[in-house]
Image 1: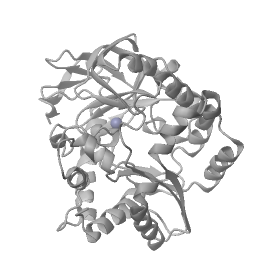
Image 2: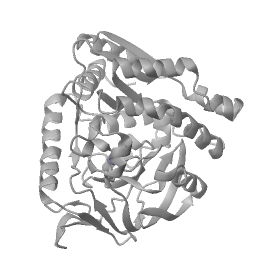
Image 3: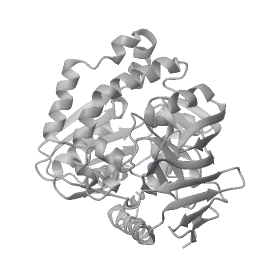
Image 4: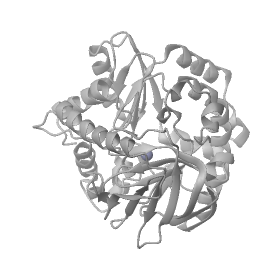
Length: 409
Ligand code: ZN
C-alpha cells in the first residue's frame, strides 16, 4: 500500500475530530472490519487523544457474515439474543459516539437467497428499532470508508493498482491530500452547503417537480415546516456539531409521506443487501410505489418495496450538483459514496429531525406530521446530467432550482 502513514493519520484525525467530533469524557463505539485492524488502532488512538473516556470496538468480518447465511438457519439468524439486547440497552444509556468504517466486499453476499436476507434483516431490525429510535438525535456518529482489496477490485476490476485507485478516490472525495488542511477545507465545504440550505429554507416551496429526457417526470409535496439540512447535525444532548457522512455533498429533507406522483428513473445501479439492482425505474401513484422495472434485480427491488408499510413511500429527497467530486469516479458500489454523486431519493424511513423540535417527537407524532416510517431507508440516484428541478410555491409559481443537473441559483 502506497498511502503514507502521515496521510492515514491525517484521515483518522479528520474522522475523529471533524466527523464524530469526539469530546472529552465521551465513550466511543468503533465498528470496523478485522481486516482494517491497523487503521482501527489509529482511530482508537485519535479518539483517546481527543479525550475519549473509553473506546470499544465491534469487529466485523465479511466471510463470517457470508458463512452464517450459507449454513445457519433463518430462525437462528433472525433472533436477537439477550446479550445483544443488553448491549443495545447499554448503548441507550451511554450514548457513545459511533464511528463506522465501511470496507465491505460488495459481492460478499452474492448467491445468498434474497428471501432469507430480507427476512433476517426484517426480523432483526424490528427488534433493534426501539433502541435505534431511543438514541436517534442524541449521539454523534460518522460513517467513513477504508478500501479493502475485494472492494477495490470490484470498483477497478482491470487495474493492477486497484487499492491505490480506490484510496485516491476516497481521499479525494473526503478532501484529504498531502498538502491541504482538511479541517479548513471541510469548514468551507460545510459553509457552502449550509448557505444553500438557508436559501432553500427561505423559499417556502410546497413541492418539487423533476424532469429529464430519460423519463423522470415526478412531483413530490414537501412538509410546510420541514427544513433542508446538509453537511452536519447537532447532537441535541450536548449541542455538539458532527458530520455523519464523509464524504457528504447532499442537501436533504423528508418530503410528505404518501404525497407524490410520477416516475423516477435511476441513473446508477443500486447495491442493496450486497446485491445489485440495475437500470431501474419506480412509478408512484397517490404517494406509493405501485410498480417498478429493473433490467437486473427485479425480484430484489420488489421485495425491498414490500418490506413493510412505509417501504413503498419516500423518506428523503436530496439535491447534489453533478460537479460533486464523487461523480468523476463512477460507481463505488457503496451508498456512502454513490448517494453523494448526484441527486437522489430514498424509499423508507424519513428524518424527524428536519421538523422543528423533531427529535423530541415520537415516531407516531412525526408520522402524523408526514414523516415516513419504515425499517428500510434505501437511496437511489436520479441525478441525470439534464435533470431539471423546479420548486413550486403555494401560489403555483415555479422557481428553477436545478438545471442540467446542477444549481440554477
Ligand atoms: Zn441522502
